[in-house]
Length: 450
Image (tube, rainbow, N blue to C red; front, side, top):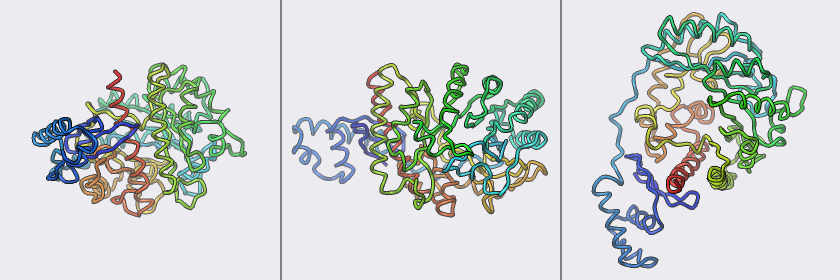
């Protein structure tokens, strides 16, 4: 399979079977389009309407030779490949708080309660049991990942400190390494918190949506006031002290700010270098939803952002945008590309009460509880269902050119919108495909400029 496309005014071809990415000129793009449409047609004759015959003959001959040698249109039937067997869990989203000090209007976690009609905090004892459970189910995996999540995890900062200290003790005892991370809105950040996060967390994600008016519209405090001014100075202070350790700012754009490139650039202009702005996921009936009719405008905005992104990086205002980052040389192996984040298989979420779910977005959904770290139970049958739900087993994904990059998309979104983890959410697919096209074009353009 070959995916031909133009992004950022760059003609491109992705050879799905081999993973090779080709930056093309106009005649090669037109010639390959005609070959894919009808390989036996008089391609040269059709190209003569725009190009010279000699040039057309040369390009067509080169393309046919690449196809004959297997460098283009490489076979992409990987049906004999299976992901690694279920049984090993290597990552955990540990909910430190089912409570929050903000009242974000688009919150999938129902402002921290996770639709459970009660607010709660993780205890030290349950946090310790969660780490014990992860070690017990990690097999020979040495490096384990634990993200303190919420709600807002810093509302339970003393417990986080004790659980991390316990984990550091377990490392020596079991020859394991915990990579702790935290996802936070930064409201409760002070110098003590910042110093602890910088010492113990391998990555920190701070939630902020961009321009003040955009952020404050969707992320108010419980008293209804905006939170931008409360957060931005703390985020800057954190990043200033963070040094060269990993972090990123993660925001959400909605139907209210389809010009979201301005929010990315606002954060870049404020001095932040690691950025991600994600589309809101909600029913189209919601007033701030991104609707099917909005997609052309959203696609144009990714194009505009891509061009600005290149301009900034070329002119000394370097930053990373998460969805434009793609590794064409050292990315994950094929087996990893089949299963993506590993939700419900290699990765689980644990609530303050110790209940286990496939990931943070599944928490509270009927039929998705997998066990408990408190009584050391785990539904391995459900784990196998998630393990077998990969891009080669999903009918739609198996025919998609982007399958080895998105790995089938978010299973929680598939479940929420289609009632079935095997049926990807269509809106997410379209957005991911557009972002990927921009990312591949950016790779090609930056390599040419190097």
